[in-house]
Length: 627
Figure 1 (tube, rainbow, N blue to C red):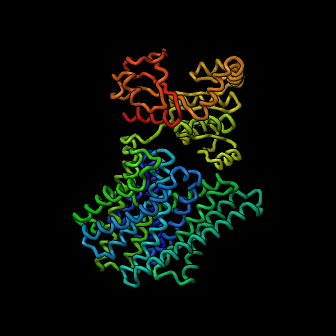
Figure 2 (figure 1 turned 45 degrees about the vertical axis):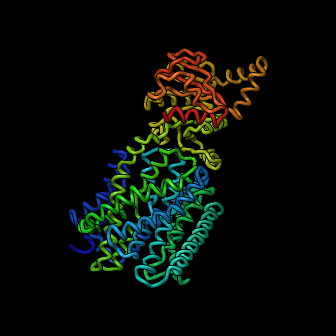
Figure 3 (figure 1 turned 120 degrees about the horizontal axis):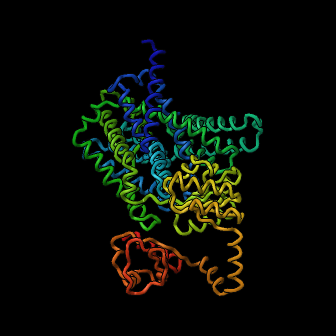
């Protein structure tokens, strides 16, 4: 077979099995990385032999490096500052203290479980610090946990990808190859990291200026913007590597400063105003999907079964210790006294699959050490065994783990990002709901995102748009646009296509109210709401003032009795366990409401209405949910 035919067979095989893996993953709602790894083994030398990365020769490292740059850029581009504000302290701890615990813990495990030298153990430990957006983002796409959990895990993945790549390389050069001391390791790591960040910020700022101040031609402007952003990712990577080499901080294997550069450029561009953002994001997503498919399938095809089998019991112990001891320890320590609930902390402990950075850099190290070096097989075997095990079990079971821990919140969707929709989203978020706004106007979407709202761009009357916004996991959908026809169609889709129990719609024309009621959509009359508010001020001024004050510092919430630990208890027993500033104000049973009496026995299906100060009411709801 000629070299040209071999390369064509290689590319076609990789893309064919990669696309099949993506389709299968979407259908089964399982992260695609799992199927990509299995596909790589299937078509590699250990399987059908269709993919032999050796035909790429020395170009393989460069191709993989550029592909990884695009993947990291994509992950950083989606890290928005407003989302990071939900748990900033915990996120910083995870990427600093947590990374250090992961490095040291993994190194100790590898040293004693596999009998490796300390130098090799620290190289493996540095590599396995990285989780990465290639494995975390697909999981978050199919497991709709709260934004604070998703954003923290995604940020940890992007940042640790950068630090792990550079740290592993300098550790390899200074400890394993013995070319330097610990002090030089720290200095080289810092120099490469800061240089990469500086280059990335410069490239990102230049691209921002071009997109916002240079005429790209009206006809092809979106296409040109997409290509400029793609070129920016590749330029940041290549420029950082060149500058690092010229500055004398790069080693024989490069510097990996390019990874820091693409992360910095992606983060900067992801948090500034850009024209054609939606088109850019869609294009980048497609390109990333292609390179992700190529890299994972290609690197998985390099793996031989003997590399894993030769590790024996020590390899199994390494995986178990890394996944069940080191990861939970660092997460639980770094999230103490934070906004996360205990189930959320346990979920974050269970989700730490390793991704593309450990695989690609470990392969580079193995090539440098040579196939006859015993350290090479231990390095590749340990890293890939942890990758396979964590991706298969943590990635494949991510949704089941989330369901078992009950960390998938029921989402509230608000269609319409106007003043009414924003006000409603504010109130729902203030009560701890997971709220997504759906808005069709691009300019409005940009403004909402800048203000910190979670917004999905699209036409709310489109079922696919609602599904992408999380309608399959929504408990409430509210339609707040000024168009009754739109509101009616959205409400109908919510009821018929997604079976959402509570669908509330704004009704602007009194004549349209019966149409909403016929579809079992709760209609809220705009004119009547205003009339009620004005009547309260005129006829019941004290109540009106009380309601205004309540809205600022207090809260009224309702919860359904579902837990067997609540059923059978008296109101007096429950009230005794409630916070001081919270009271059970209403008991609803079988459609009737009444004031609760101390000796009333609670039944399954009862609805309890709590009133009091916001923190106390929230604590009461969490108390009832935890029982």
